[in-house]
Image (cartoon, rainbow, N blue to C red; front, top):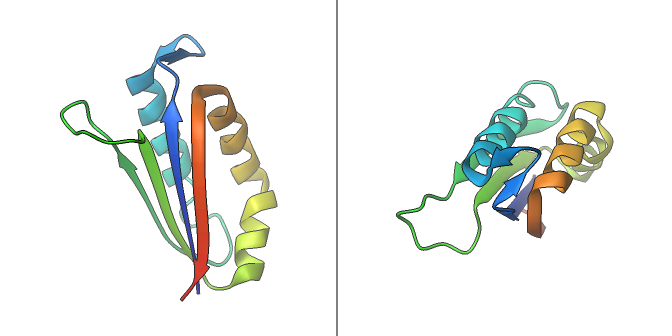
Length: 100
């Protein structure tokens, strides 16, 4: 199995939305990938809150059957759509993939 974890910081405003609105929108779009991506076993999206002291605004945690499934996810049309949205609203990104 491969775990794929991504953290993003979001712009205060983008696409006519507040940071909080874009965080929720991205969460909804990412969660909509559940059951769509072959080989994706788990997906979880966490949102940082204003009451929390955190470095990043959104965290994506996914588990894939193997590297081939992760590679397929990266180029899947449904994921490409979400990536385009995230690219317009994020200010920073960190990612880590590892085998378990």
